[in-house]
Length: 589
Figure (cartoon, rainbow, N blue to C red):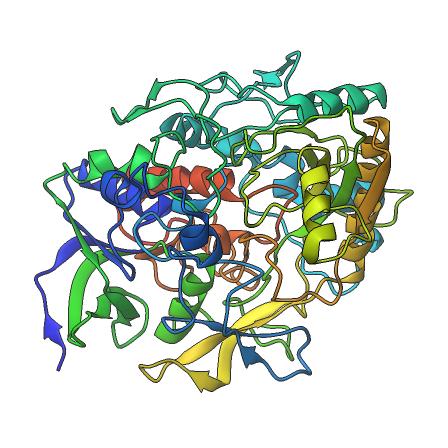
């Protein structure tokens, strides 16, 4: 039997970056806010103690902080003709579990998407002609521009204390920064991190080839910092335990280090952890949400009424909850119609590894998740695509995220995989190997989408989410072209031998790649091709807003977190300044 609880002003589903920011800002505005989180509470002092946090076996290999498939999984296939099977062990991507979400265990790369990324379809059509776009694409403009989002990028960067070097201040190109970035209103809140020897070689080699190197923006901050919420952070110690780990040093921006200490002091806020939301409840006509139904660890179901429902879960689970709740028309691949599940995308990865001579000594263990030097000359439409025959691009970076003893074992090609020869190979190459990688965009296509699986269900009898995804020829061509550019830079750095890493096709769910899953509940200007309007408000149920990378119409050549943060503040501004004053649709159709 479901028990009904007293009503709240706002119910937030998921307490990661988006959920914590929205909860804090709305609670301090005087609203009663309850956040419901499936995973456990996680706190820096209690969960990431300095003596236990850098445990590679526990966190890096056994993945203690991530979602278990027994809790929730997705089914996967490459093409619509195949039968999808459940993912029994997460590999390619690692969904989060617990308070802090993916912002707890991320590496810390914090990019702003480029101005052309937000108007990509109209931009490419204008410059190259509509026929230049790849076959079967569903590429679309976002419905919001870079200039509109710039103040909200700024808000997120100052919340997180991001370290970096501005390349474009109010339209004026600055030395040492990224000359291709959109204009920013003020510098980064903290200066860039100190770079290592490999990054210095990369900067020299890429500049020698006419490229424009700059320090990668980093949430592993370079100096002590106090953010606008009054939360203090400490400088990074370059320990190399960022991705898959919580930061014991209060140096990596996360909800734990930037928002939660202020949020828990708000008297109007309440968090309920280890409780899973089963559905968003609707009025009989399906046009208004009345709250959510969730289940606790004892198996008791509860109805939490609320005036405003904010879906702030990981991208997959936002989409699944919309489908299970009957919010928005499900995407029908066969008909090419519907919006919820449409435009699922991911990220490409390619590059080159260089092996250097005896006189070279890198220090891969002195690292952080976003330490590195990048070039953006081949990203988005920063270069002429007319001769290369693909759309999209990639950021190219030389970086050490870690030199941890279990997972970091570089060896020359041809070295045995075990035994004394393997041990000698690792010893020889540990501080003489380095990589240059290209993280690339993925466009949206009719054949890449999310829907409910017709066969497999969870413990509560609900269909699992089904993912249909494969890299298309456009992404293959782009990523492999980028790998060749990386190889040219590695050779210019002085490598004696290189190994090119091209894009693996078909896409495999087994090896880790990125947790940059985007789309499925995308934003836009047309209800026929988007689930959300430009303010991340459901077209169909106006008191439901959906946050996160599930709103991306396609993915760019960057990590998504910076844009997720900017969209959160953008939507928050619309909620406070427009919706709460006159509840209803913010965009008329």
